[in-house]
Image (cartoon, rainbow, N blue to C red; front, side, top):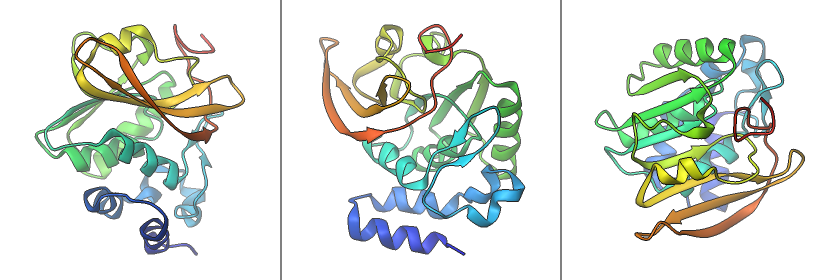
Length: 213
């Protein structure tokens, strides 16, 4: 059976993740964010099924995206695709109690699952909304960082408008069958400086600016 320490040792040898990111991974139990029958597979480095075709990303993908956000204490982060709440939980640990994660999910069963999981993990700085997050959330904007955990055709313009200057957005961009993980840093003029982090495969984003409605 794979253990947390196996992944941490692998990452230390192969990635430049920060200590605060590795500590967040240590503190959040992935087995509490997956179906009970899959808990023995919690620390295999692979995605696992949730429901209605949705998955929880493999741990390395979660950490790559987390690292790309360059999270700091006290930041406000917007996430599209709460899933089981695991990515939100990792982010919440890093930004601390003065930080805030606003996350959205369109699958009602996952909304409830994420809320239950976050409560069980005693994480109180994440708010899960049942709605299409592809348009952002103007009432909570602006955001320091934005993360998209589902495949999108492009970064929606409305999201970029709600990102602070010098803010970072990270997400998989492409078609329904293959995507490139892209990190964008917004300059003071509203333009994005892009960095390409490699090929990934995510389930499609739902909603107005997604693949499915």
